[in-house]
Image (cartoon, rainbow, N blue to C red):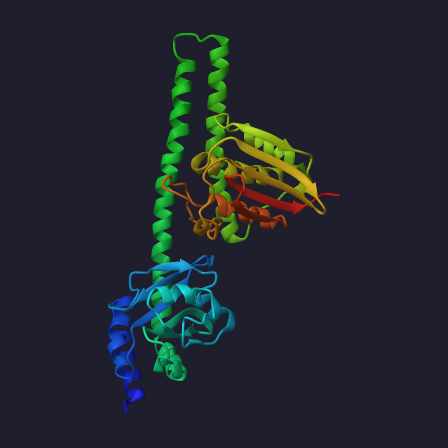
Length: 379
């Protein structure tokens, strides 16, 4: 009989020698195969927003090329919520929604155990077979020992990956901001030079130039407000100055900042007690998102239903892809090839929730994307 204690000692030694998580699993797989055959050894973890599952698998594992999936309905979600092992002897008899997907990828049976470090759930460790009824299904206790042996290394590597990803996002945000700021700055400098030039301008052209300068300056102001608000949210210091506000007024004021968009005004009175500047920031971010990814006309709707004042921003574009909706309001999420900072819609959710409201997204039956906001109605 294979000595399980010896295998655990060798796995611990492999953890000390490994370069990264993939290398760790690749070193551990043949050691574990001395006990029972296995076709996949993998770690699954998620991001702070729990939108997607990210996999790291040992070299040569079945479905090795699958790097991520939706979190909802996954094995990781089940283990995280139940804090115990998930044992599947035959994936043709689903326990969780992802079993059908696992079966389509050649996985017939598996065991998924939680990885816990310093009392915190950090990931899962899974062993899978291409045959139903894998003997690993009866080795949960041993797999939990393996997970415990590797927990410190896994947690440290995931923290490093998270820090590296955060730094990458910050670099990307800075690059996007530099691009976003250059356009209004160039406009301001160009029109200011035109106004102050030696040749006098007709009053009508001068007035139009001043309006363009003002609009470009406000666009810069909105970008800076997003950055300062994002920093305040992270620190828990976002300030809210509450007053009587009508969502219809906010919607129309935000629309005035986008003269290039065609609007359908369906705004009816919708009173709330809120910070008017923060709500304007919310709607400006929604409309900026439409301009970048959607298609006019843009329908702005506000009204009151029961105890809530509602607002929706809808467009006639292609709508949201299903996988996008899951992470739409996640920090640094972007929707397509036209990159933004990735903080706009995240900030929308933060501001709405600070006001005791909710924000949701979806596609309309008649086509196009729609984002809906519900806030407590003022009495």
